[in-house]
Length: 298
Image (tube, rainbow, N blue to C red; front, top):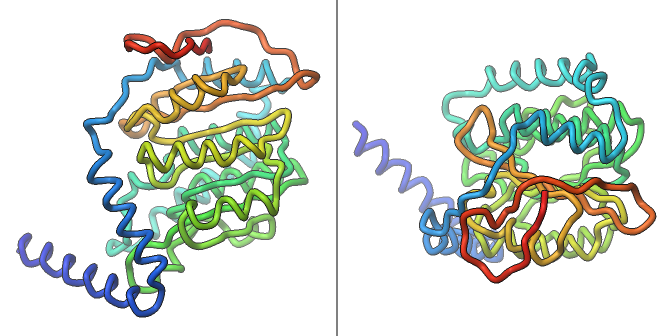
């Protein structure tokens, strides 16, 4: 039965690829290139990041940006969006195209809410939506802030009715501040940044290869506002986040072990002169590694 199920899935995927060949050869090329990247930049490129606990990192972020962390964590709107997302997760059908571990889980989603409430961004850019857990928390925070928009890029799954799955966890009441472009970040991120920049907050959660993550970081750094935050999920698969922070030297860098899945997310705060004062301290992303790059202090 397992062999037959696998065979049926492979045949269905082949049919989807053949349909793309006629309907959208550009998307087909993007998907095939992504598969090649995944095969050639897999687990052998994993990087061991030093980490700090969620609460320590968030408290330092709140101290830097100037906000009352306890009151934000106690907001009814945070518990409301968490309940809404969990309820929608329970209603996802068993034949859903993605396993739930592809979706941003609650520790990262909560961080996105807190960070957005602290930063109060006007423009948030996101790559990778999946079912939209993090998107929902970001949109809830923007709604509470009373300003700002979320601009998301996502490549829909190879599945029947693929568009219906993108952001399915986002309540309709929060979608007025949301713009979604379907496709890869390689195709859409440059034009999106030119259109909506400067960007106050950037969230990477798309293809987690070294090439793609490095490309997104390089693209967005040109459009970051004077006070900005970059968040990246699943950074431990490669050293892209380490290399980017080593080159750009943000004021704060942190890597956090997610409590609900075996992966890390990282964030970096950039403050130019005249933004807000930052205190030094922390650990190095170069810890335990041999490198000639300058050390980044958290």
